[in-house]
Image (cartoon, rainbow, N blue to C red; front, side, top):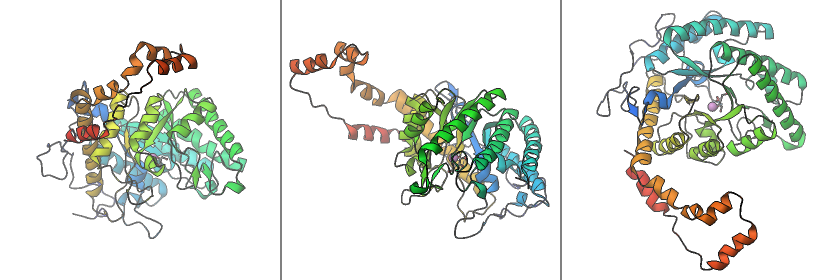
Length: 446
Ligand code: XUL
Ligand code: CO
């Protein structure tokens, strides 16, 4: 297979690869879907409607594989324009060629993925407007839509102490320039959501940090952004993407529960939901399904960044999701949530540094898309055909009694509750049946 750097300056970047077909699980063709059959109906919706796949612009078209120990290994031809703006235009061509061939309905970007930062704030705004015009035409031509936009307020060295939580007001003002521009871009491109990932909104050292003041600034900044967005005509959800650490030692958007509490405290709960990322969940010491469940039960499951970590280290490795067990658990929550609404499954994942062939980016996405399609089928079957939902319901049947209903509706006081125990003083011991559930779960992984 050709290295990815052989097609500089040509119109087609991913030469030799056509539209990825669905061939079914018996196929031995690597560049074909085995499970993702976009038109297949599963419980009243097509796979395409259930899964709402998106490609992440930053990993797929900007990342070259550099790490703290060495430079990039992936020589991306579209990054070799004579000017940064020329590279940005080639990158846009490459992105839409890739996404069209893959057959994904959505994409996501940061402002600085799409367009060069430029030397001044004015140049930054102008570049972004230029690229948004071009992206709009590409969307129209391809039918691919924007799932969400966001601003990168963490890479530029000026954000080393945070953006909205920076001790210096002027840096927070610079973040406002980007957030305003990225919201404008999202509105112009019809984006369904707008994301905030608090990259450096946190601290490295507690004793040089006024945590209370920084958190209040973050709440204030988000209210300002929300108000601006609504005035600018943004009708979708604002999303916060929880992550406990990396790059900061401690990040304020630690996990779903922390973020939901914060949103409620700062008057943001009506306009904001959560974007749950699998690898961020595991960094926080939770499972992916746990984080999804906390968001869902609060009516705040907005969207998903689909990836996975490595169980033997504690980094944000952003690998493509291939673990059917984890993905099936996630799809159980998504189906229980009634779907993702205007959210989707964004592959916030990157190929490994030593994956340098032109086909590797396709293989990675095909693997992720097939795994979630298969997880959807398993989870749907589990909910429709297995004893699992009924077993879980039955576990709580005592609460469906008269007394249980009185408790739940607030019509029972502590003395009445005590009275119940005195009348039935031998408590029952009912097995949690975990092993039965686990065996059932495995039986439906197929
Ligand atoms: C970083 C991360 C980001 C956000 C968007 O861990 O997940 O790429 O998804 O800023
Ligand atoms: Co993410």
